[in-house]
Length: 80
Image (tube, rainbow, N blue to C red):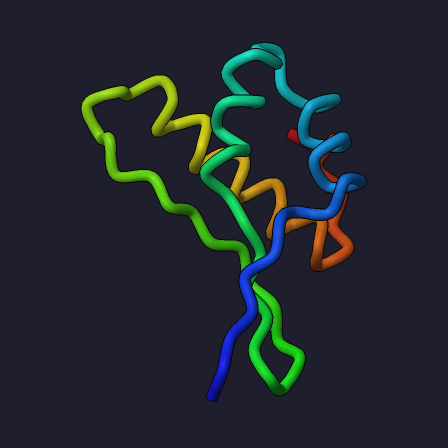
C-alpha cells in the first residue's frame, strides 16, 4: 500500500500558532511535522525529529503533533 506525505494544511498551522505562546519555537517545530495519507484515505500526523537533546524543541514538536491530530479529528484545542 502506498503512502503520500504532505505538509500540514495552512489552517492547522495557523490554529497551532494561535494556541502556543512561543511562536518562534512552534514555527521551528512545524518544520518537522507532516501529514501522511494512505491509499484508503486514512490520514495521520507524522513527525521526523531525531535530535532528542534539544528538549524544548522536542516537546514543542510533540505538542504540535498532538494539536494537529486533534484539529484534524475536529476537536477544539482551546480547552487546554
